[in-house]
Length: 349
Image (cartoon, one colour):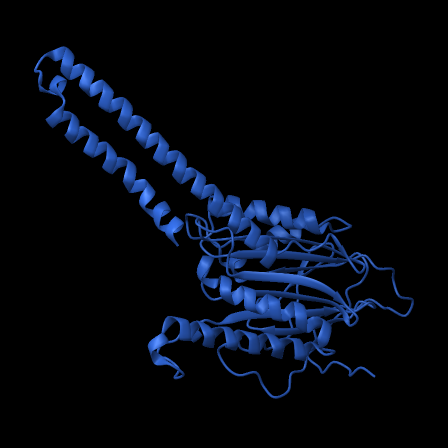
């Protein structure tokens, strides 16, 4: 605590000492009382040199603190939004994210992919707000997801665990922001914060199950980009309680060589200086025109096009994730086309 206080006073201490030295020089030094031009020039040169040194010293100190803050931000990002492995249980993955806050490299978007006995489970989400204010919700949701995917046999159980973790985070945050309210819920809590979430389960045979809480649906990449639709979605987490029964949507099988592209709404809502929306579908179609589709190339191309479109700065956090099926074709696996069909996933025996 004492060291922190001295660090905060550091930038003010040097200018204060400089001012005190100037007053002492003027009042106590006999040389400063002389009126000659040479004396004035010498005095000005001395104070200019000392002042410049102090300014440069303060600048170096602030730059050092900024580097330390950025190092902490990068370390936090590696823990929260750790890059997915290039290969995961027969799938090839690539991901990136952009924060809308210049002061933070971490945004309010989240994503992860984990191999489990039930298949590879993937999450992508978007916390209301962006930058540092959303980090708490991101940490709570990702921590819950990474634990639940191994424990829950059904995808619905994973979503319910994430929903409980989000509500618990909101209650704790509300108590911290309104300690005077005690156990009572404050009138305007942080619970106005909600999260859109898309959960996928990609099984070894290529079946894809999805639960969507207000999040954009992904694109299927195979000789172009084709939006995946699955009918109505659930409300975002934190808006309404989850229904008593959750039925994952069964999507067409992800065949070998095909890929899914997941994103947050910051990619679709990004605008250029003239107010035009980012043409995500067009860029994806061009990136996925050839075969095989490269997740890394697709993510990099969309990322670069997004920065060009917005002039280098986005106004909302953006997360991009591409997943390609590199597993061998199952003999009984037949190609399927068309949109996702909403039906209950078969129960496991």
